[in-house]
Length: 280
Image (cartoon, rainbow, N blue to C red; front, side):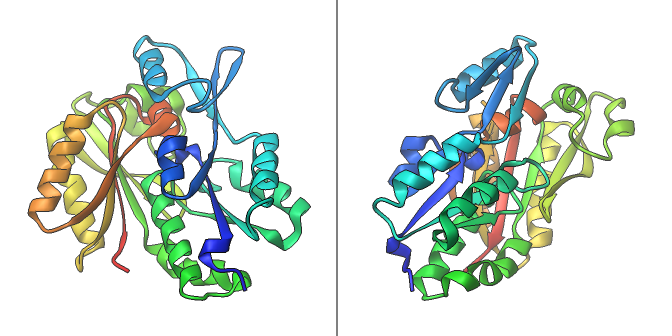
């Protein structure tokens, strides 16, 4: 039976940590792809988060795409030289084709590679990965891991607050926003990440009210308290304000992540997000 120490952990770059930061936590990052005109750039390798934000603020049109099969294959091959198994945890299959691609590549390695859909992204992905690692450490069998993770994964939530509607209007990726996006510019949606999907949540008047609403939604979903990660797209002050408010209420904030290219391209610079899961 593989133990947590004999398993290598892989995640895609929607995780919100740089490859170097992730490696310090024992996580190997494979890059999503950023599309700019006719150029395909590997997230955080060929283009930085800061460059993504700068291009968006210049009005450039960017999009994102799933991890390339070759990057997954080479990562699995390298890690299986030094580890018994690989657990590959990825952004929700409702939001990206990465999970499906990873599952196809994993078949080349038999049962030594297992792919897990986080049903989330960024801090939510990290929470699910950490839960999977904890369960392996407790002795959960490899072939029972996804079943064991499922109850926790179902409880993980995300709350995403864009600073402007501009980028949501451009991307058209969030279902149910079509009628809303044409409304008053001061009105913003809090997007809710649950069950692997991003859905329009409550509407708020202005960003400050939005931060209060994010905290309110967290308490609605986790009245008993929970574990949280913050994330932001070039808005450290907004993330700091939200984090201070949560800590004053006794909420455990595990860290602050980069929103990353996937969130930045679709929700825009200035976005602040909170990802939460139950206490373990």
